Length: 139
Image (cartoon, rainbow, N blue to C red; front, side, top):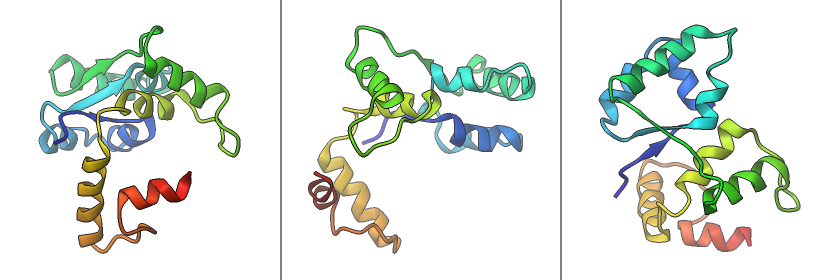
């Protein structure tokens, strides 16, 4: 069902800071995708160890780096999320917007419902009986 996992800068950095990025590769072999804007956020000169660790994942084929192309639907969504979101929504950072933009279209509503059922089975409090109901409540 899920072939790629797009990591935002906050999520991947949680593993990088404690030097446990190997867990991601073990749990999700061949599925880890780092969007270029998230990678850029982890490449600041003040935190070279984070860049070294993420580069290791990429160079050893444990993660892939994915750009957002200017002529793509993903770029249009990325720009919207980072500069002018819909009314009532806040601007989010590039490292958070990129995985959302790249992942859109990968998961269908049926996939969402399957994931939702699994989460409910684990007693997660989600606020709706299904993913479809949740989407309808947000429109």
